Image (cartoon, rainbow, N blue to C red; front, side, top):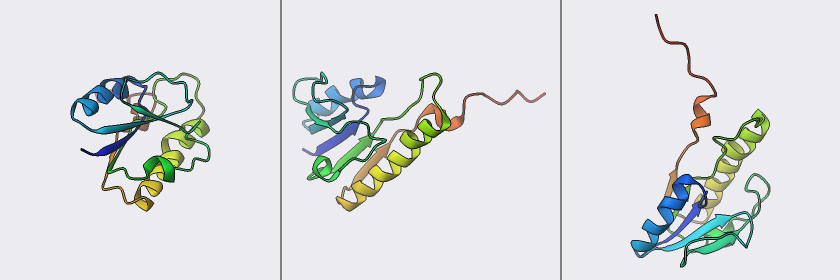
Length: 125
């Protein structure tokens, strides 16, 4: 089947998604911070460090047909707006540009709840 690259593979959604992709017969590459990250058997680790920093995405995306981007800051407390923007916006844009340059046919982006802000607006009277 297809080679699929997954960011945020060790997060809540990623941990549920990896086994399903494997069961579907896909080659799964998990983007991780460190090479010693525990992953399900059959998943290939692609350690890149912090994706908010400079990352050479070309070797990770080479030969992939799809990218599922789950990585992002969502539930951490005391995160600065600068840190949120660096990971949730800037890193995502860089990754999407790299995916385009690599000729990927599919990009699935799962946004953070932080895209909606930290508070709900007051209810209308």
